[in-house]
Image 1: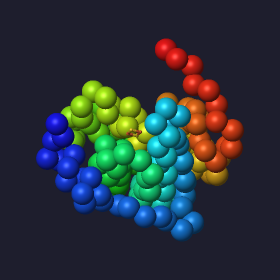
Image 2: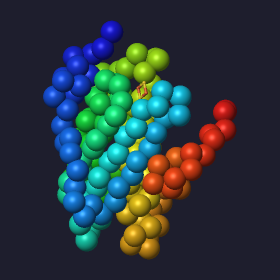
Image 3: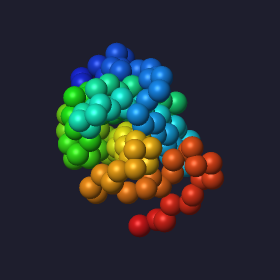
Length: 147
Ligand code: FES
C-alpha cells in the first residue's frame, strides 16, 4: 500500500530535530486526526534556505511527507520553496494512498507557516504566501471552512 520511498522516509526520516534561533518556525495541526507538525527554517541573507528541521507528532505518512518536504526545500530560495506543493511532495514519494493525502498537506502548511513567521520577523512579503490558517503559536484553533 505504501511505496518504497514512503517506507524509507518513514523509517529513516531526514532532517528530524530543531534549529536554535531559527529564521522561521511554523507549527500546524490537523483538527481531524489531531496530528501536529513543526518546521524550523534557517534562511540566509539571500533568502536561501540553508537548513531545515522538523518534528512531528503524527502518523507515518506525515513523517514521510515532512521528511521529503524538508529535502525538497533545502538549498532553495524562499520563492522556490513556495512552489513545493503537497502534490510535488507526494510525487517525489511515488504517491500516497488517497486516505493519506491530507497528511501531505500538513507538511506544506507547516512550511508556509514557517515562511510566514520568517516574513513577519523580517518585515518582508513573499509572493503568494498567505497567513497560515492554523499556526498553533497563535493559540486559538480557528475553524476551517469546509469546501
Ligand atoms: Fe493525521 Fe496522517 S493521519 S497527519
